[in-house]
Amino acid sequence: MIPEEIWYLFVFPWILFIATIPGTVITYMALGALATFSVYIPGLGSKQES
Image (tube, rainbow, N blue to C red; front, side):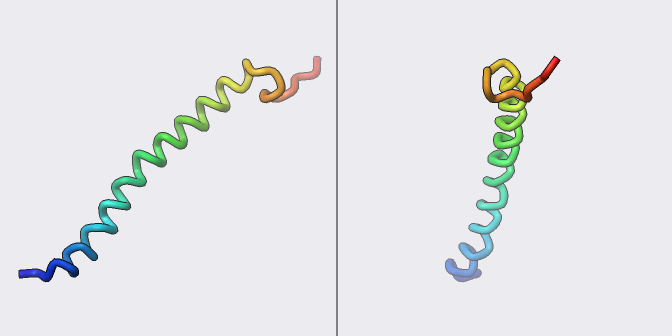
């Protein structure tokens, strides 16, 4: 049988790795939403001089 300490050393990095994937997806979605809706917020969007 594998000792408990060795098992946790193997399992915890995988838990952290799997947990970062939704965090990365949510971050990209939030940045995309901010870039999209910043056009409608005065002072945040890019200035278009015409």
